[in-house]
Image (cartoon, rainbow, N blue to C red; front, top):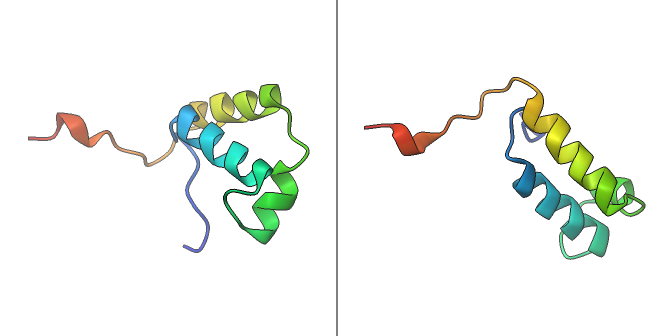
Amino acid sequence: PSYPKTAGQYPNYLEHALRAYRKGDREHALMGSQAKDLTDQQIADLGAYFQSVPGQLADLHEME
């Protein structure tokens, strides 16, 4: 419960977050140190990977 669910997450959200951690605009001791050496291509690859993993993310736009 204390970790975010990344499976099925939108890749642009993950890419934005990882770039912010890398730049230092978003702070977290673990994520900042993990993201600091990632290239743009690696960040894009991670976004694509986590989007492909089945998760519990639901698109609420189609709910009535």
